[in-house]
Length: 317
Image 1: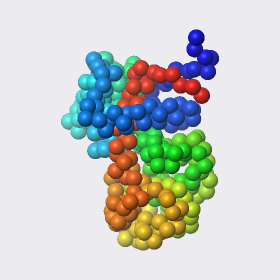
Image 2: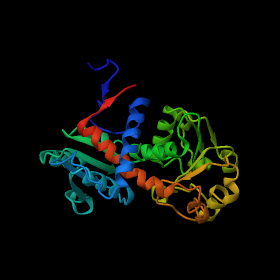
Image 3: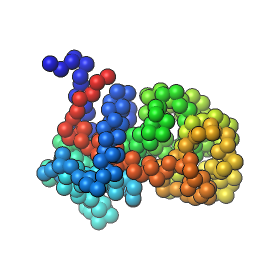
Image 4: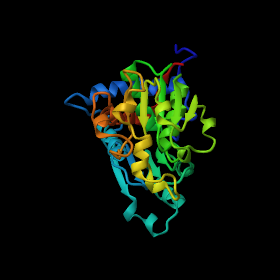
């Protein structure tokens, strides 16, 4: 007989980290760990999603996220369709709701969506019958990125609890920053937001971060994880910084600045990197960088999420 503490993974969608309990996050990470090992084998395929259809609907250009979701779906046996929004009816004036209704009529089993507007993914999820995964919506959330970052950290540090994590750079425009801040604090880490005052969003204190620093040298003091963010110039419609050169001078991660962190601190970046702006190449390619490992963890995490949303799973709090 099952214990009363055994709960199924009850989420039909993954729209954000908000709403997930720590034990559910831990379950996703544990399952993803098993996929890491499978993906390192010569034969990587399973048939868990055999006969099911996954649509990747990306309204923004993506390389890492789109490719890893495609690989994840195919390795689990799904029929994967990448919808080219640039050539779709959306470009002819079709609304997101029209698109949702059209796709729903095709009876997919999972839709993975990235959209430039915060809240667009949630809106679409209300109009379809299948599971929906948020692959990034505006400046709101990017849950699978936070999960893969957490998995990368846990594999290096053994735990997330008690770690000091500095999330640095363009906090204002970063959905990665928000999702990571929520997840890491849920799992017992201490988060520090670091960036130029013009790139720290109003109300960042409500994220629950331990502290907010405008000074990178101070912000990196004694942290276990340095998470650099991409400077999202395409989202900036004002004078957020004087120049890229000035940004690197004051907020770029260099070998000298990294000395402020703990001796065994790891360096992360969600990509794509702007080398010489957010981070110098010697650090990005150095022995303390786990940036390429983050890419590997992305496929495993997305496999785990697809399995849990489609098939559920037993989670013990």
